[in-house]
Image (cartoon, rainbow, N blue to C red; front, side, top):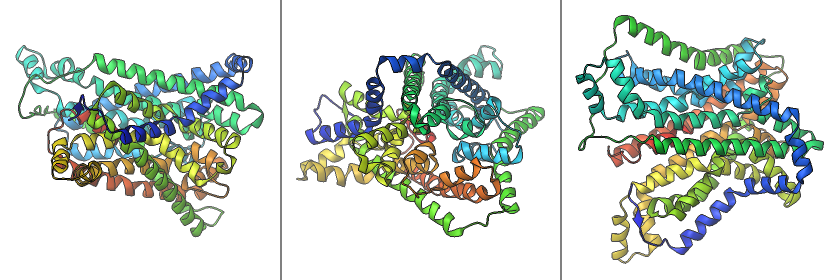
Length: 531
């Protein structure tokens, strides 16, 4: 990554980055103001309630079980599809990543439709593991692919078996990626609303939403939201500390060399195929088959095609507006951190990443409080909903923007300046022209994720403004599974469009940038995983 050290960034860029950060911090700042204004007595009363502690224990236990489950599934699967001669290993890697396109509430809806008795903690844990293990699988697979094979070869030359050499040398090189993926899983579980609500698990998001809807207990909702944000920030801090202590470096120089594949025995190959097939059946097969069956069975309520089309247009329109706002906010922050190395620019980016630790239900609650009490004319408007999407998923756009701008040599811009171009013109005609696929990819990440967002949409959408997510949710709440199937399938199909476009952008950017990924591999993979 190329940065300019010791050069002061232009004042307009600093001002734009500060404005973006301030806008991104509005929900968190207002939540803090809301809690503090409630007074010590109400805060203490809410904290000392038995339900608060039960909710905390339940949420942490669910998070721990899901993280462990994802690690147990993802690390062996990543090793099989990257380091072994498993038949169709490249195809399996693609298929194993597909659960990222299935929202947790869609997977939960599909399983409940087939197995109505499913409920409770372990049912929610199973579904959350099934839809979130790719957050660990993809970064670990990338780390195993780029791990230095020389260390493993030395271990083999000293008499270690292939498995022992892999476990003691290569696997530790993937631990930082596993930790980063585990962070994403933990934050996903803490922020999940759909699965825990459908399985009736009193986790933070479900209790916060219930308290919000009970207008007499809004203070309790704000206090619980603050606890949830604090837990998320602790997780982010802990992961960064672990990553800093677990850095691994390549011992060789020159062209990157990949490790040779491990040749599996016939029995091991069969076991490996059974393992990955079982994962795909649970994570993808059951939900897809269930949705198709529900669709073929129909329902008592005739499908309103225009209602389905309207919900599809609303989903795409609101998500697109959120993506545009997110890219506009991310551009000055990404440019500042990619081009100017300083503690101030790093702190600016870290502050903008606050949305990474803010679940949708917390941002929705904060903006509800803010709009009702300060700007009531913005309450339940499309702009507020799009702004919530932008704040919630801003880190995805910042990461992609920073990575793509950093890949463009500053000398191109400097050369344009020597030819008489002003700073803005030089930047747009050199850096922006080359980096725009990556910037657009960040916008597609926001678009893809915003289409699936449920709690913030439920709390902030304008009256009568229905999306695919809210229409599916309203039918699932009354167990109208047949009526909800078209909306679930439409949501998956709609999300597949930006996912396909994103893969095209990533492939194009890789061809243009080349194979020198040493400094960008981890960040670019994690940005993509955020979809």
